[in-house]
Length: 267
Image (cartoon, rainbow, N blue to C red; front, top):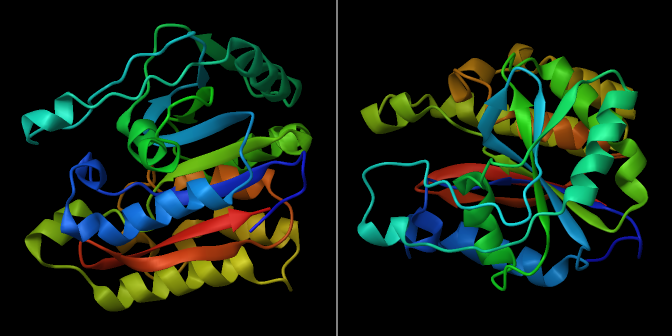
């Protein structure tokens, strides 16, 4: 697996349930193995731009601190979950580049020197790059949770595609926790939505505009609103697709806690 020597890799992943991928949970074993493998196989980036499902703001915000602390934004886990460490540095110069690219596209963006890294960042990256030696800038979602606005956010970052970056969208292709824990999942709807995402992200017959328009209007897909009663875990995918060019590869399609989920890579 390789990309252009100086080009960005754009990857959307499921990050699993809270800290469980780092706690040896058997239901996350396949996800953990996949993330470790991706860290080994992808070209080593000079920096990581991470869009997490767990940060929303009325306007785009970017971590601007030199050493952001971790935010343990989960509850009810063993004490070990609150002792996890991932001391990756920030990179203010990259944050400023991102801010300029967004502002040039008419998207207001603000640096946040005090904001830490949430578990959508440190859980997958601790598996992919355990040495924590690659700078990371985290990008917020927009609290509008509008699909088209997040595709536009990705498009505004296209100028950075020539940089040796990893752009990592961290969320999930299924996130209906109420149905999951109540045992009322509609598995047909889930399967239909996974198939729709696969086709829209990976079909080489689609133009970039067709792909991005479909993902901007994701609610119209079969099973969409069952899989995502609220959009935040899907929207990092829209940012990735907006920034990318050409079809993706589905590089993961396997069970997480007994339910299928997908990851998509553009190179």
